[in-house]
Amino acid sequence: MSIREAIENLSAAITADPAKAKAKPVPATARLTEGLQCEITSPHGQRVLSDMPPAMGGAASAPNPGWYLRGAMASCTATCIAMRAAKLGIALEMLEVTVETDADHRGLLGLDESISAGQSAVRTIVKIRGNAKPEELRQLVAWADAHSPVGCTVKDSPPCSLDVQIV
Image (cartoon, rainbow, N blue to C red; front, side, top):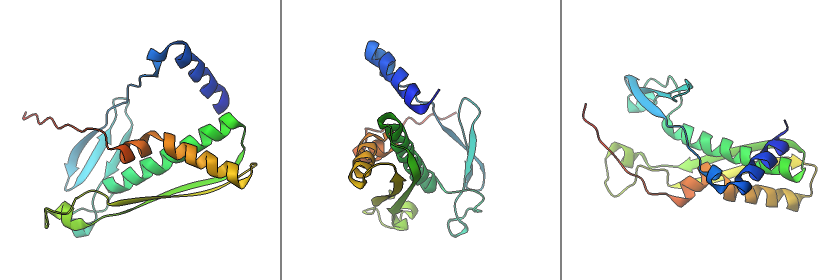
């Protein structure tokens, strides 16, 4: 089944029964394994590692969590562009999405409580080529940017909660 067919089938199923639109995202669980290295797993057995650089006490054995955030945003945006292109019949010849951020380590290290530990600026750079006019490609990218679940989550800052369970 093509990407376009899959999207059309899913869209038809959701249109017929809007309750099917409610996603059940798979949780991610991180367990500290050694030093600052964490193993992140899903209930389906997928596994990735994160670590911090030596300057922060890690071993740099894996990308840091901030890199995964940027990677999630870049890959989600690229996926949305590719899905929308397939739906519109645009053949992509090249697509590359890069996400850059700014950060101030004083927040993470607790050196200044007025400085957030979060990423302070997010920039998405899209390089694209396909069988459409430049303006159509710009519209395609803008649509995907407005519909990327990870990007929208970062931009819209949904409510977050914390539940501490002492075991």
